[in-house]
Amino acid sequence: QGEYGMHRGRDRIWIVHRLYRETSGLMVFARTEEAKRFLQENWDDFEKRYFAVVQGAPPKMEDTVRSHLDETNPFRVRSAPASETTRHAITHYRVIKKTRDRALVELELETGRRHQIRVHMADLGCPVLGDEKYNRGDKNAKRLALHSCHLGFNHPTNGTLMKFDSVLPTELSKLI
Image (cartoon, rainbow, N blue to C red; front, side, top):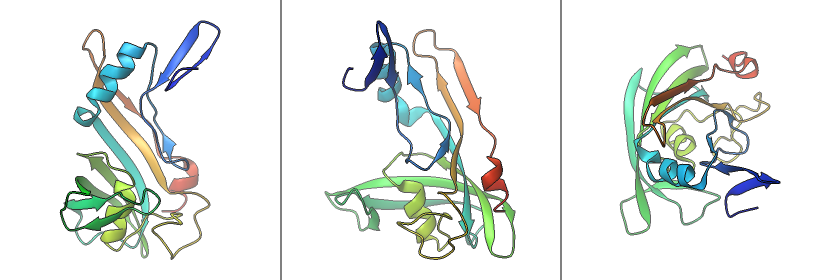
């Protein structure tokens, strides 16, 4: 077993990125360490979209959230004034469907910071359902209502544009 790789015998798979433990959806694995390195080094340039079912609804149907995230406590990230200990975070969102007390939101990450979506949605007053860290309200969700629905990137060896999509799981669509 390597630093980020898992193997059985001579076969090896490299983990390119991580999702929150309770987040469903798309993950990328590489077949070589070189491919893993390329994908990780270019990760910020890739298309990354998520679906989230949130409590309430964002103030606008479509907008961009920008803040500086303080990650000094990795278990409780928060928006804070810009400083040497914060990192700029940008999340674009679009409301897909609204009900009386919830919304289905599609989010596109321009940056990929720890807990970025969860903090930004909570900052807007519409935390992700099932989020025990940033949502003290609705307990009807049995898990974090966050799903990695789209990844787009160039193949690490031949440069071909690759796009992958995953539909919203039934257990999350039932919440909206």
